[in-house]
Length: 522
Image 1: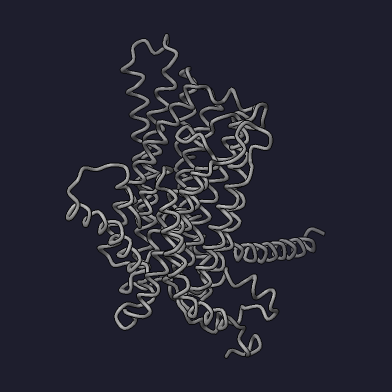
Image 2 (image 1 turned 135 degrees about the horizontal axis):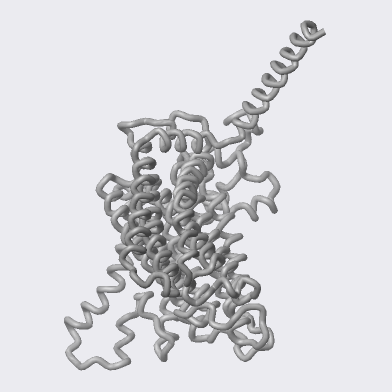
């Protein structure tokens, strides 16, 4: 009986193994191939393993030295907190400096024309490539955090620290490392020469060092204030969720910008970026409105004064949003003016859908219209009551005037640069360098009036001489001269926009779907 059953059992086992192999192969296709490639190279290489072993050896040395060099360690109640902060500094310093740098250098080398890699010879989409690079770096960070976790938890036995506070600090550190990784990926995707990439890399290292310093200070404050005791109240979850939401928005923005930078020039690169920024604008505005309510009303959802450096949450949101949209105007003016077939195939055929999609598509006129609409909506939201019955119902009209003058100045410089580049510099300056012309005009507009004043006016300075700052968007103040700035900027922006009116109308008329049906090319 056993002789006849063994072949059947072996056949069943082989069938199960074959079926399991097929399932595993189908599941393997779900993994991002870039993540698999990066993790294999990281594990097989010497950099990550050497870094991990070095970090573990240093942590072991720190723990041993701390215990041996502290004779009254058994009687002190702050040994665990001090040891944890030392280990936290080592862990965060290595992860926030070396892991992003490792990821960025590899991405830059793969984008080098002399070393074509999987990045250029594969059919994987740009979004999958950037997601794979970011996820692989985040997985390496998680691996290092997991390897160092036993030493971190060991400090709990030394007293002076609680586990919830410890895990909150580690979660904050990991979150900031992920943001730093995405920022490095974005910098590595910027199409620039090697010297310019070196300059950008140095600037990024400075930013990462500042982030490291601020994170260590924040971690120290959270740890010694006993943040773990407030996990059951909104005094912790309100700021934590708000900070997490803003961090995710920043990470998502850097992600979509990175995808746009490595996408083909013929693709509709602006559509996902502007769609995400519109959603982020809505969510961040809602979060700041909640903070504004909590800062000036009693018994609200969140604690008061969420931003220690600026108690007015809506004003903070307004200035940050206008700064980003000002950069968006510069970028939009430098976009292409002729849409390719890949873009026109995506244009809706219905007129009302086409009008709604126009601001979100790639193109100079499209980007300018989207930026102007977002600026107008930002100023409109700023003037609305947000206190909802509190003692502070709206942002002051002076602040709105300052923001409006700033936006009008940026619009005026961008539209003037667009006109100058098209009419005077069309044969020497390409469309992609329109932002350079705008920045040069901005520098001249800020410096020339003061140069004239100091050269030809000899009397002493008085407040009326602030009119010499007309044309300088960074010198607008909520004083008696604000009306002159607003008027001057509005007239200049209107004249520059009218001069570009025929060009804008031609761009709108050219925004038509490809006459060829989808799938036939053309």
